[in-house]
Figure 1 (cartoon, rainbow, N blue to C red):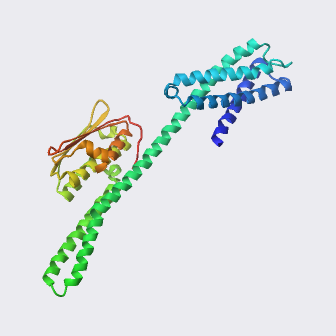
Figure 2 (cartoon, one colour):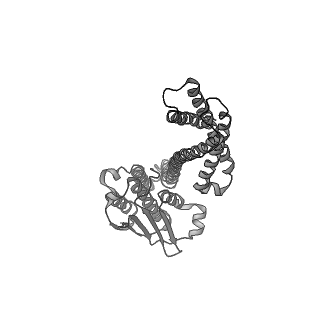
Figure 3 (cartoon, rainbow, N blue to C red):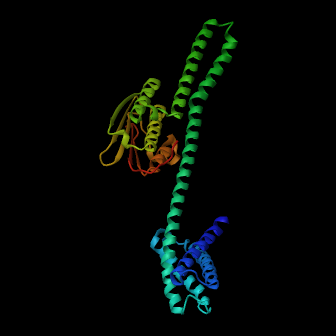
Length: 355
């Protein structure tokens, strides 16, 4: 409600400013008090009426898609509504003894000029509205990215650490029962518990590393990727062949983070779902102002249509990260023939999700 009344009130102030500009042009300074008050009141009323009429008609025409899609139609609506509103408001003023409209014809020509000014003001409002809308969408993308990241962390905790802790708990319960009667078996269980604890620790270290990609700032984009590959090679015994070329300083930090997360998620899918032993990651910063990333694995592959429709493996999250940066995300996989993910992002992409 405040926003609905704020715009007409602001328009009233703009109307006063335009009216006083006309007053100084036509009457000069100083001018009689009745003339000054007439200009001021007329500017306030007309500004308020023009804005209110414009918003009301805009709300009506917004029901039609063609109106929302074409700026020219919105500007034509603004011009006609503002011109007509000004002319109708000017007609009563023409009968005043000190009227600044000597005739209805002068009021008509003036209304045409005011219509042009109103269109320029509407263009300014249109620009600020689009800017606010873009900021709102960016904020929404950030919130969705945070939710997706939380869901991914929850899945990782459930699939790895939680199951490891559950296994440790079972082994410890068994160990308490057989420690005195079956010492040899107890020793075996102790070794198993040690291995499971080490496994859980490695999982936690990997997740903490993923949650804090400060290495992007500390070591640079390319070195951060190489460190990520080394982590997967050490942790999962996954052979990773890396191809990196281009000037990393051309890549915006937001794009770097998005690519880092996508490659990270893709490698997670490789080790957790694809049952692959080898992955090849290629990243090229091309001369045409585009970043090209390809991730291939020798896993068992899957049905792309079925998997994407159910939102598995974080594919939806990866695609959303890329499309938020005006990029393109391509997925190709066939049963028994591995999976290939291809990503293209223009270097001039706007800022997207930052987490």
